[in-house]
Image (cartoon, rainbow over all chains, first blue to last red; front, side, top):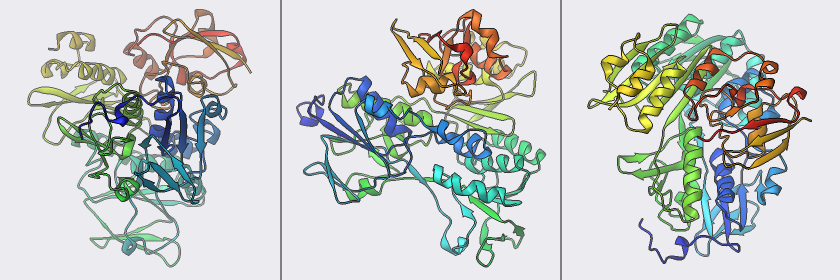
Length: 420
Length: 105
């Protein structure tokens, strides 16, 4: 995927150039914004298949579902921002295909749009339950878009018993919201613990304890054999024969990178759209950012589904399109709000990492992860100071002494100073 | 509609019309105020919407939560006496013509 310096696509796109961005989520919007702030003066088109202008997704499973945040406030930009920045926003528009020669995208309505540079910010989609399990019943939901929440909320309000399939972040956030609405909540997770792919066992245990204390019932290490009901879902049968009654089911069983367009266009796809460290695909005119992009980095492939990654990778791609030639230096961080728990994670922990627990004076605590003796990640559980100090240390590759980390009396500031 | 003046890290100024009830962070984001990133969309989880407000307006803004207080202690730009997370501040008429400084990260 090396790029010849005199390849036409290596040049900084000029005033006559046209850049098309497919996907109007956080990554697509950020790419458009950063192209303008980095001086791109040519034509810029942002295409989204949803009817809504770019909006924040994280509140969908939290405050928006709870009804604490109005729909209008999810919008990332004011309506007139797009015209002011000469960004043609084409909503409700699906891209049918990419014609790499002669560089145009074909829209679902049959029209064509030429590009000099194309950015794929197609995001990810929710994995759906297999038909053998869902049986085409009504009352089964997934969560990714505003439209998903707009149908889920009235269903929750009209129901008393929620079954969440999948003990990941989305499922647990929904479980917390539903308990807040007074619903009975069961969570079925096939793995023997929560957050199996995305957080440590220690953090998962703390989250599990919190949910149990708030009345959520867990079925860990259990799979759903089939959902029950005639037309509407009425419950579920688990693999061990357990029957759970439910009138609404939310499947939070993971996201899949949206790669169909790229694959059909013959671009390399491998757990996402394959891009080099600069964000470029194997076609020098085509780039990818956000959830859909799998970056080839020195440590291996890196694909993340998070707002931080959407913003940072979009920023990188915009700068590189404008000639910066910089590699991606990811600063992974995540957060989740469940009941009164604010979970903040910096870095990427893995099974097998050594975990050091720092117990705060109050209810908060943090988990610090070490791999081969080096600090690699921190989870703050209602511990914003610990989280931010850990994040700072990670940014400068500093590794605090684990015995000091575990000492609750030692001030965190001292910790930052003693790191090597 | 209160007018809010953002004083940017590079010395530039940007005056925008704000809507009562929106947060200061949302106002900044809608108007692409440089330096306000707001990665967590107002959840007070990232501290990338740090601003510095004039002393005289602080009391009109209501108390600061313990969580925000802790976040500010370790925000990327050093905390000052007028430091707040702009996602935790609701715009009101009391903020008309206020100058909001975006600290250099």
